[in-house]
Image 1 (cartoon, one colour):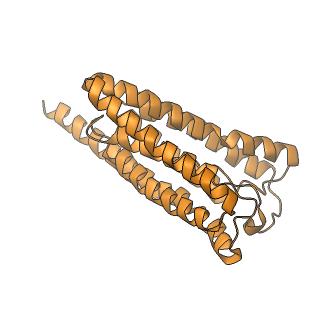
Image 2 (cartoon, helix red, strand yellow):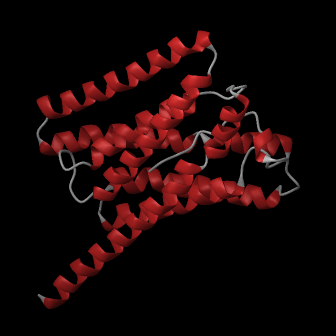
Length: 238
């Protein structure tokens, strides 16, 4: 009985430690677009940057936050908190983008944002109205997992670009490192929490993050200032 209790306690400590680490590393990802938005504010123009990554990141954060809430799953408080913070960051970025984007694109941004909130509303309504607790976890879990996998797969475009150009100009080292560390933390978190909807997509994130770091060191060369990049990166979250 004593050994079983110690095992449960150690498992909880490891899970919580991994969750805290994942939250800390995620902040690095959330903050990574700040230099880009400083440039947008300074130039009072969104230039060639796209707002779609931030819209999609908001959707991903909202779905994952709903999955981590006590209404859907248990023991996933770190998932809910990190994605709630991520959603706030994305809303700030989207607001700034909306202020400086060309007028003809403003209605598109509004339409996409409305679609995101409508979709989240539908997911919340369906999961609460038509599913019991276990089916609700499965329903939202599969949606969250699919969203995370698509987010983690987005760097494949950047990886392909790095290989074609033999340059890491569009793959900042600290961004790749933060993604790798965050994915690793939440992969461990999901393992200790026995939650495949957390450890499977983050396991994919670990592999892709490792690939990015490997490519960075392979193709490392003197890069232009990050402010000169014209292609926005789609950032992944747990």
